[in-house]
Image 1 (cartoon, rainbow, N blue to C red):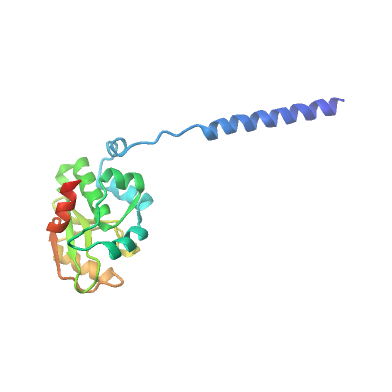
Image 2 (image 1 turned 120 degrees about the horizontal axis):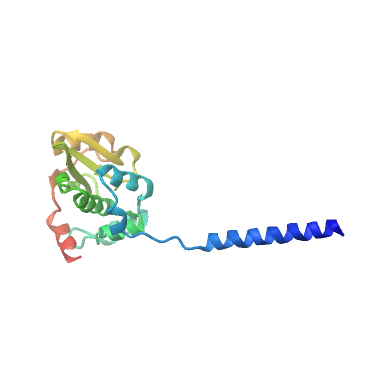
Length: 194
């Protein structure tokens, strides 16, 4: 009889423990917004760490962009909030997220979009984010699936020096038409419409 009572107590204790664990497992974890998270970031390293850990290249959007979009009809660019929530995108989404976030954290970074025009040598163009640290040019790029080109690079003395680095590490692109600061006109229109 005592063994049966001990067994019942043990069973009751296990059910109670399982119930308590299920309550904690079902408790909702508050989702923090882009504004809340970024307000706690203090340097470009916080942006880079988040992008390295959470941001991924969106292969589906890439395939669709090759089929549907052109210079006359550019793809939509995600807002920084959309990139933060979806945690994926293409190079222009990643560059825009980095630019807006870096300038929000510290305007002295003077973050800017950098446009690498790869056509006609390679079909997709490329976008990265430049910023200044201690007066020197750095590049943040999390908009490619190639590990050697994902990260923060620099310092560089010029965009041309970065372009050499880009060609040296890109598995396909060994030649580009140009590199410049800022959105090209066809993409600027898309950004301004947001």
